[in-house]
Image (cartoon, rainbow, N blue to C red; front, side, top):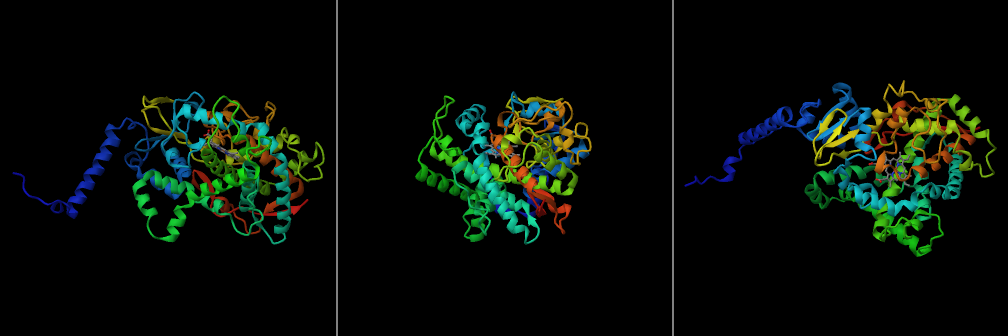
Length: 506
Ligand code: HEM
């Protein structure tokens, strides 16, 4: 007969400590002697416990931590029980190339809602890209030029007003501008952020979204419980990701109410509500609503961060500003609108090199994009990586490869302007530079999942940079410090303080 022992008798502090000690010992034995990844170097804590990546993801220091792990342990490192990071040229195609067997990692299951961004299955993703392709051609990006021009004019009016009051925090203003542009581009109407006294709720919610999704993905039950706690401020915070989609639902319904399903309009919703020309069925209204929120998110923070760093770099380098202004003035004077035509900007070598160099040095997504090896495993560089292992290559480190980008921490647009440079094109991945530089350069990602909005982002940035540089000289605000531009990363980088600049008419 079994002794009649109550469970409570077993749960003593001593036993609990014993269980934890055995658990840790088993984890360490696995990491050191049994795991198929045991030969890959990395911190023992990271190899044996998911807490290492959990901490860096919550603290917003993934990209920087992984850079320091590479510095200590070499170009291929293990940073989680089932996660490996590469800083080698040959990993790029194996992980991100068009023929790569790797798919997006499970992390994408928990972030965003039902849009192309989160689709992991290769066939489903290809299908969705076809469904949305009409909205993202370079031609569509060019059609948006007139509305971009009128918003940039409005933006210049705001600079005129604000600069009288002192330094401007340009990260804020570029965010407002790009958020408004996203409204015009996607749902035919500005979001009114430039006029508003208050930062729009959508923009505030974007800052925390990846953190909340990350927590929901890791601890679904716990988060379900926490979300139901009767604490108003907590509920408001956690509800932020739902509000993103409330915004797009309202915007879509307003749009259909105003314009119906008119094929002649130029905004992206009008293209998405039409049947695609690519032989696939169109998107349901619910999916379009999700895509709109995701796209607004995808466009706003990326583009505005690039613009902030670009003007920061120009402020540090008055000589470069003058050269750029001279290049912008050379083909023709700016039209009456004060905003140059995009066609006149596409091939300007210095303008395009400055944009490219900004995205090299300050990629808005600094961490490596997470992918997962197929169940049968995959050869990546010199390593066989077992199935369903998370793999990535840090964009920040690829962009700072000292062999191919000598003096990588210096801002040198000229590195993209060698005699052998290819001419720029509206949607080129990287113009100019050597083959190795082009391979390493991936601010828009690579392969199947490459950014759908690259053409639109480049059109927008060229127009904004040209218009502002023609009109203003820019310098650092009196109290601005380099540390202001330091960042945390929750997938996207988030400036810790801001980009404080002075604008003076030239
Ligand atoms: C400078 C601006 C931008 C940068 C640096 C950027 C960067 C990126 C990167 C790195 C990815 C790949 C993400 C991954 O694999 O996880 C991506 C995907 C995407 N981006 Fe952008 N983006 C920018 C602007 C935009 C704009 C303006 C739009 C919308 C018009 C947009 C829409 C998208 C979409 C829909 C995807 C998902 C593509 C897919 O998975 O097939 N992005 N972007």
